[in-house]
Image 1 (tube, rainbow, N blue to C red):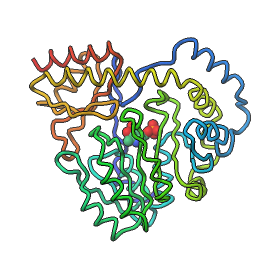
Image 2 (cartoon, helix red, strand yellow):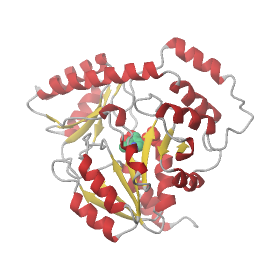
Image 3 (cartoon, rainbow, N blue to C red):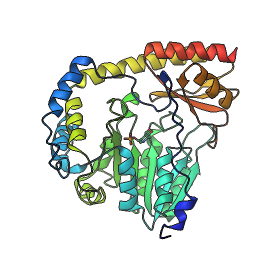
Image 4 (cartoon, rainbow, N blue to C red):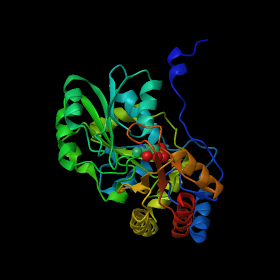
Length: 349
Ligand SMILES: Cc1ncc(COP(=O)(O)O)c(C=O)c1O
């Protein structure tokens, strides 16, 4: 067989799909579009010519995003989900070099490094989930490639220290593309794109899948210096975002009020959940700057199974380093969070 033998050694992306009434296992937005907006969107989609190829490099959506973010449309690359951009950035800066990240972190960084046969270096986070800054600096000083850092972090839901990020940016500037993955940045109200002006080796990765509520549509983008975007764009396959995806992305950008309103509700619910979880002695809820919680529980496997019996999906994380006994739970709608809290008190007795 002509397949590359190393593929055999790469475990496939791991996710067990369960059918539950309450889905708290993928850090999604729990909010559907209201009916009147859904109708308006479907009307808009009728105008998409399905027989024609979409725009080559999503220039209309880039233009709208550029206005919304006050960013240069030429310093932006759009893709069908930020996962695709992770792959593109490994191709752009990591092939034949290194992929550096921390662990635990978002699994697609290491997945792509392994699939593309790139040397992968994962440095464990400190016990309190802060950055292993000195070890990272040491690696940055002697290597070359692409460095991924999710901030807010996943699955630990914390923010890293700003001073540490800037020190790492400084250490990375000669030989690394440094990717700050801001998939959850609306939930922490942080934005590191201001660094790109002084550090053009930084890329801020974003997604429409979380605060924008479009996980099912598949849209992501990255902000970077114009000259970096010109090169990175080449690594995203031509015509790989459909006209339907582009039209939906533009439609959502026109409905910022709804997005802001949904965001505020998630932030309120996050606070309410944290207060309630703090009352339960048998678990530890880590503070969250994202739209999900990491919980340390007495037995992750039995809690996962027990929640399924209540038709609630959560995600086990207990296979990951530092995360023994941990599960991850998205912040849902108020009634979903109530159902989760009530199932939790029943299951933990
Ligand atoms: C940190 C992080 N980055 C990127 C992604 C992928 O997002 P997308 O849906 O845009 O591929 C996720 C999804 O959960 C994530 O947690």
